[in-house]
Length: 149
Image (tube, rainbow, N blue to C red; front, side):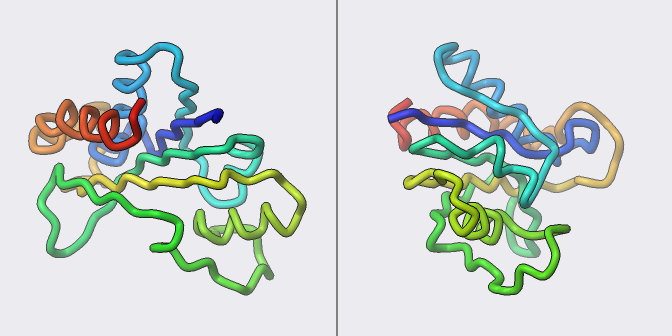
C-alpha cells in the first residue's frame, strides 16, 4: 500500500506551520516515507494525493475549547463534503476528494486527518509557540504508532 504523508500549513505564520513541521519530523524518523509539504488547500491538493492508497494529512486547527498541542484524529467520515461544486475556490478537503472521484482521479481509500490544536496562526514567525513546539515529539510518535509507520 503506497502512503502519502501530507503536511499542510503556512510555515511563516507561527503555529499554522505545525502540520508541515510534524511531516518533516516523520520524514526524519523514517526517510523512506513519502512526505509532501504544502500550503495549498482544496482542489489544488488533487494532483498531490491522486494515485495513493492511503493519505495521512496533518494540519492545524483552532477551536474555542482546545488546548494548544492537543491532537484530534479524524477520518473522512468526520468531514462532510459540500455538494455544491459551483466554485473550485475555497473548497474543503472532503469536497475536493469527492470532486476528484467524480473527475475520475484515483483517490486514496484510507484517509486519516490529524488536526493539531494551535494558539497563534496570525503572527509572522517560523517557529511554533512553546506549547505547540513542546508537544510535537509526542504527536509525531502518536502518528507513527497509530499509523504503523
